[in-house]
Image 1 (tube, rainbow, N blue to C red):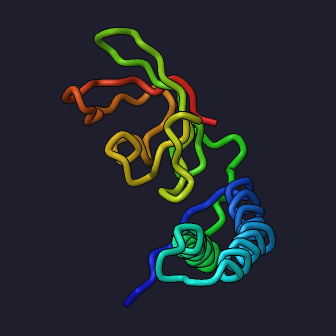
Image 2 (image 1 turned 180 degrees about the vertical axis):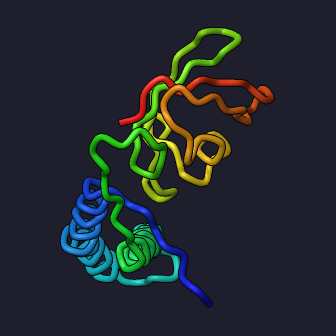
Length: 156
């Protein structure tokens, strides 16, 4: 099976590395202590603390594997200073032509996407319709409310 490239900014790589380190060195050690304490109570068949610790261990282990996969397949997004072409890593400001509403966001890889932090995935319909365009270009963007014509105001 071919592994999928994970487009990440340097900031994203650092964030994922720090999370991985925390999970491996802090959380897994905490869970190990919880499991030892629960085992010390005796009968494991009806031990809710033991079951909860095992469940937590499985969740943390799954996240560790996910982070290792992301970092193993990471492709660093290099910023191109002065380029006005929309690409992964670009921060874009556009205006919806019918409402004059302006939006600003950064296009990042799917692993790093967080709409609450104004970071959208390069695989999203909005990003796909803007990639390769330039400042002052217009594009038709697919949104949950339908198609919207936009003008790109700024790319950096």
